[in-house]
Image (cartoon, rainbow, N blue to C red):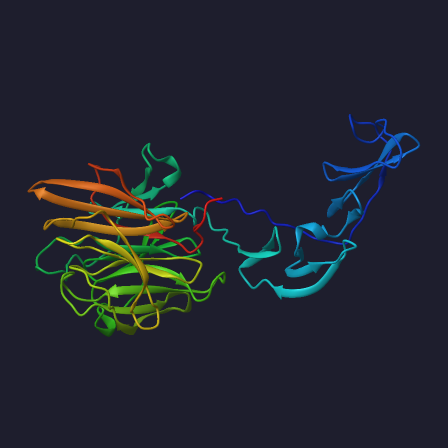
Length: 385
């Protein structure tokens, strides 16, 4: 995921000063008549055949000079308030106030203010506990960077069926504060640093609310706000078993006992992995063996499928699906799938679906990592300009 640099815009009272220095085409340059123009944040006015410059603290228009806002640009920001811009370039009526965790930005819109280091990247983990960042901007080159190897203090006893398997990561997600949440096959949740891969217990209750093992993804409570919940999908000891429940944890409120919402309605051969967005949407990747695997939006109130589906090609993934993980970034769904058609020879792939066009591609295969968890925060972009 690309790192977004969020510019903090500070708006104040309109101010100006006269600058009698000379610059090419600016103050001191020759001019004719009553010519005016804006240049480099300054208002230039022709006086006696020479441009004189006023440095504008907020905005500039050739017709009005230094103003609080440009009427032609539409709504503006006055601190945290989104306001109308009057015809004379002064701030008008307040239409809304940006809430906590957001800022007023260009065009008079409230944008998420995510400041934790690396919080807008995708992160993945594999069977061998390699904790990595995934940067789609690097494709078609290697998009994976190893941050460290997880050493989470799990109890070593896998509850996944069939019994007796080694404890390993099962799923993961990332919150807006820059903390990764990693679920192991022991049923234990851990918090992982995005910068060091240091791992600590999250003090969850194993198998609470009969949610034993599950996919995970954060989604905001409403579009554009900074409150969110960690949604869980599945709950059985065996990923192929049903019913598959939709539940959530309020991790920011310290509640790690899942609240079960409903049974997930979309069909699949295995329980889905989840990803969410700052649009308050929740999506699931549903693995299929003989039918096309697909991505589907999930209704967060009742677990039902919403709208269209995005298929991964025209065939199923095959009978030997070993790992799957899922995250969105910049309007693209990234699906990490490992299949093992030949015993001992897994093929780990990264697959992409453009959310707007439904275009499906396999962007990487035969990776050296069997990725079984992927997470992205709700700070991640959903549209790339």
